[in-house]
Image 1 (tube, rainbow, N blue to C red):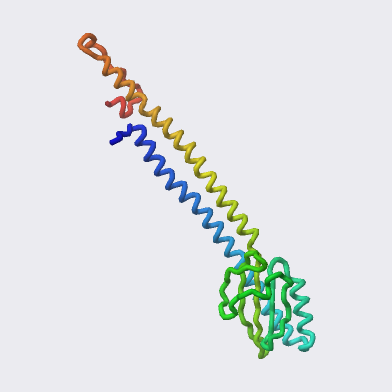
Image 2 (cartoon, rainbow, N blue to C red; image 1 turned 60 degrees about the vertical axis):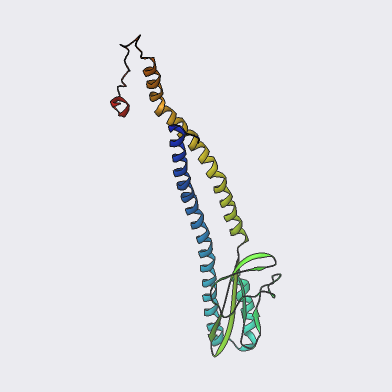
Length: 218
C-alpha cells in the first residue's frame, strides 16, 4: 500500500475541492448563457406572431380580399429582419412565405404553439407555428429565427471554459503544493533537529518559532 505524505494528501484534498468548485463556477455561466440563448429567440418569435396578429386584424377590417395577399407580402418584407414568416388562410392560400431553401419541406406542427427546434437548408432554426382567428377566418402563422450564429457562440464559449478549467487547475494545484511545502517545512527542520539530539549532545534544544502558532506550541 502506497503511503502518501501529508503534503501529498493535503494537495490532493485541495485539488478535489477546487475541481468541484471550478466545475460549478464554469457550469453556471454556461447554463445561463445557453438558457438566455433560448429565451431571447423565443421572445422574438412571440413578438413576431403578436405583430402578425395585429396586422391580420387590421387587414380584415380595412382591405378587400383581393388586396390582402399583396399587403401581407409587403408586411413580410418590411418587418423581416432575421425572423422568417409564413402566413396562410383557411382556404390554403399562402399570403406570404420566405424564399428559403428547404422551407417548403419544413415540418413545424401547427397544433403545438410552443417553440420547436428544426432546420431549413441544413441550418438550425427555432420555429413556432400557431393558428389565429380573425374576422371569421382562421390563419396559420409560422415564424422561425436562425440559430446557427448563437449555437456557434455557445460552442466557442464551451470550448473556452473547457480549456481554461484545466489550466487554472494546474496552476492552482502547483501553487497549493508549494504552499503545503512552505507550511510543512518547519516540521521537517524540527525532525532533523530532534535526530541530532543524542547522548553526546544532550543540551541541544529545538528553536521555538516566534510566531506563537501551533508549531510554537508543539
